[in-house]
Image (cartoon, rainbow, N blue to C red; front, side, top):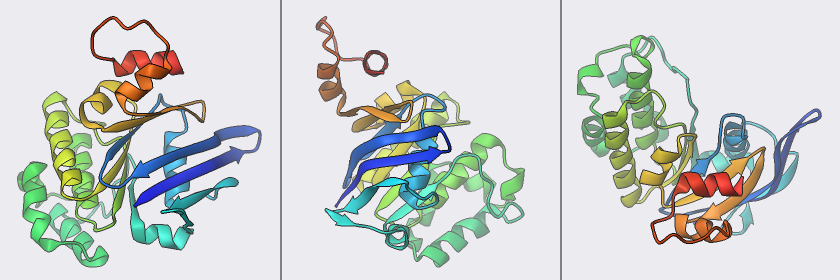
Length: 237
């Protein structure tokens, strides 16, 4: 399946948060949405997930228009900085997620192990630290069955070792048949784990493609070394 946004525009009064945004999300890939704070990344995800109305443009799945209700069957969006079911213990939250969304219960133990959540299963969500809660919410997303998983800032609150472990878990999750669309403002994290990139700045897409494809758009001299995502982003934005 290919999920596409075509000419999507979102305004708040005189502020244009998204300006004629077009991009594609291909089945089975890890796509990174790269941009600084305020670039429009969260707005794009909320429009794609159907939480915000789109002023202009279209969302299609395999070239067919997909409405908000249909998107809820195909997309699961995990926002950043939330603490759902804050008084419930993590074990309950994971079991509830599987039951409510009809996820695969057989995957629960592996997800818990990959995200190092065993010591936290008896803890209330609201009492977890920022990094612990981030890993708990990633587990919730990974246990849902929707073909497309959108995650806002998956590495926020994680230290270097945890970022590497979570990134490897997400890569394996995609390899098992899930499509991941990750909003990331730390470019070095995106470079390590994503197959392709969408560069967003000022609410506009400045480039889309693999690192090699994006580097050809910069028209900078080839110094013989591998392309650098940070330099590519700076050149295109």
